[in-house]
Length: 120
Image 1 (cartoon, helix red, strand yellow):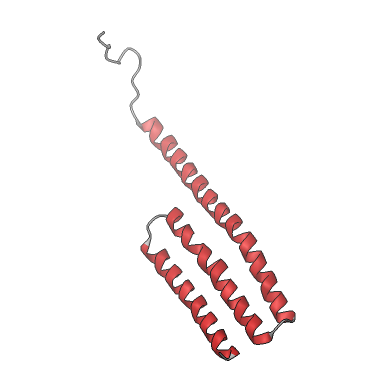
Image 2: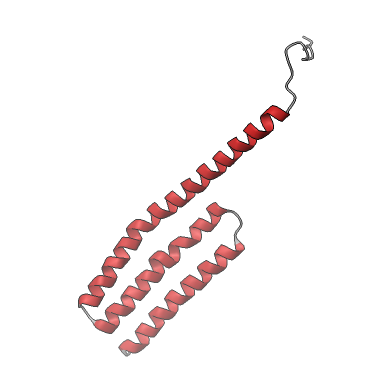
Protein backbone atom coordinates (compact mmCIF):
# COMPACT_ATOMS: atom_id res chain seq x y z
CA UNK A 1 0.00 0.00 0.00
CA UNK A 2 1.23 3.51 -0.72
CA UNK A 3 2.25 5.69 2.22
CA UNK A 4 -0.56 8.18 1.54
CA UNK A 5 -3.23 5.56 2.18
CA UNK A 6 -1.64 4.63 5.52
CA UNK A 7 -1.59 8.28 6.51
CA UNK A 8 -5.28 8.67 5.67
CA UNK A 9 -6.17 5.47 7.55
CA UNK A 10 -4.24 6.54 10.63
CA UNK A 11 -5.82 10.00 10.63
CA UNK A 12 -9.30 8.49 10.16
CA UNK A 13 -8.60 6.18 13.11
CA UNK A 14 -7.60 9.20 15.23
CA UNK A 15 -10.76 11.01 14.15
CA UNK A 16 -12.94 8.01 15.03
CA UNK A 17 -11.34 7.70 18.46
CA UNK A 18 -11.99 11.39 19.17
CA UNK A 19 -15.58 11.20 17.87
CA UNK A 20 -16.45 8.14 19.97
CA UNK A 21 -14.87 9.71 23.05
CA UNK A 22 -16.93 12.88 22.53
CA UNK A 23 -20.03 10.71 22.21
CA UNK A 24 -19.12 8.96 25.45
CA UNK A 25 -18.67 12.31 27.19
CA UNK A 26 -22.13 13.40 26.10
CA UNK A 27 -23.85 10.15 27.08
CA UNK A 28 -22.26 9.40 30.45
CA UNK A 29 -23.55 10.94 33.63
CA UNK A 30 -21.24 12.10 36.38
CA UNK A 31 -17.85 13.74 36.27
CA UNK A 32 -15.92 10.65 37.31
CA UNK A 33 -17.37 8.51 34.53
CA UNK A 34 -16.74 11.23 31.99
CA UNK A 35 -13.09 11.46 32.96
CA UNK A 36 -12.53 7.95 31.60
CA UNK A 37 -13.35 9.17 28.09
CA UNK A 38 -10.50 11.69 28.06
CA UNK A 39 -7.71 9.11 27.83
CA UNK A 40 -8.40 7.52 24.39
CA UNK A 41 -8.06 10.73 22.36
CA UNK A 42 -5.03 11.85 24.35
CA UNK A 43 -3.19 8.55 23.96
CA UNK A 44 -4.57 6.57 21.01
CA UNK A 45 -5.51 9.59 18.92
CA UNK A 46 -2.15 11.24 19.44
CA UNK A 47 -0.34 7.95 18.76
CA UNK A 48 -2.18 7.60 15.46
CA UNK A 49 -1.33 11.17 14.45
CA UNK A 50 2.32 10.64 15.43
CA UNK A 51 2.39 7.44 13.39
CA UNK A 52 0.88 9.27 10.41
CA UNK A 53 3.58 11.92 10.71
CA UNK A 54 6.23 9.19 10.85
CA UNK A 55 4.83 7.51 7.74
CA UNK A 56 4.58 10.80 5.85
CA UNK A 57 7.87 12.40 6.88
CA UNK A 58 10.11 9.43 7.62
CA UNK A 59 12.62 9.51 10.45
CA UNK A 60 13.38 13.18 10.93
CA UNK A 61 12.73 16.22 13.07
CA UNK A 62 8.91 16.22 12.64
CA UNK A 63 8.69 12.57 13.68
CA UNK A 64 10.88 13.12 16.73
CA UNK A 65 8.80 16.15 17.76
CA UNK A 66 5.57 14.18 17.34
CA UNK A 67 7.05 11.37 19.43
CA UNK A 68 8.00 13.80 22.18
CA UNK A 69 4.49 15.29 22.20
CA UNK A 70 3.08 11.75 22.43
CA UNK A 71 5.42 11.00 25.35
CA UNK A 72 4.32 14.15 27.20
CA UNK A 73 0.65 13.28 26.67
CA UNK A 74 1.08 9.66 27.76
CA UNK A 75 2.85 10.75 30.95
CA UNK A 76 0.74 13.84 31.64
CA UNK A 77 -2.73 12.49 30.90
CA UNK A 78 -3.09 10.33 34.06
CA UNK A 79 -1.69 13.13 36.22
CA UNK A 80 -4.08 15.72 34.80
CA UNK A 81 -7.04 13.34 35.03
CA UNK A 82 -6.26 12.60 38.67
CA UNK A 83 -5.87 16.31 39.43
CA UNK A 84 -9.22 17.08 37.80
CA UNK A 85 -10.95 14.31 39.76
CA UNK A 86 -9.41 15.46 43.03
CA UNK A 87 -10.34 19.08 42.37
CA UNK A 88 -13.94 18.06 41.73
CA UNK A 89 -14.01 15.95 44.88
CA UNK A 90 -12.63 18.78 47.02
CA UNK A 91 -15.05 21.26 45.50
CA UNK A 92 -18.02 19.01 46.24
CA UNK A 93 -16.78 18.34 49.78
CA UNK A 94 -16.39 22.08 50.37
CA UNK A 95 -19.87 22.76 48.98
CA UNK A 96 -21.36 20.07 51.21
CA UNK A 97 -19.57 21.47 54.26
CA UNK A 98 -20.88 24.98 53.49
CA UNK A 99 -24.42 23.68 53.12
CA UNK A 100 -24.17 21.93 56.47
CA UNK A 101 -22.90 25.12 58.10
CA UNK A 102 -25.68 27.20 56.59
CA UNK A 103 -28.44 24.78 57.48
CA UNK A 104 -26.94 24.02 60.92
CA UNK A 105 -28.13 27.07 62.91
CA UNK A 106 -31.60 26.96 61.33
CA UNK A 107 -32.21 23.42 62.51
CA UNK A 108 -33.77 23.00 65.88
CA UNK A 109 -31.45 21.03 68.06
CA UNK A 110 -32.66 18.96 70.92
CA UNK A 111 -31.32 19.76 74.30
CA UNK A 112 -30.84 16.88 76.73
CA UNK A 113 -34.01 17.98 78.55
CA UNK A 114 -36.08 17.83 75.34
CA UNK A 115 -34.82 14.42 74.28
CA UNK A 116 -37.23 11.56 74.68
CA UNK A 117 -36.06 8.99 77.19
CA UNK A 118 -34.98 5.63 75.83
CA UNK A 119 -36.80 2.71 77.35
CA UNK A 120 -34.65 -0.20 78.28
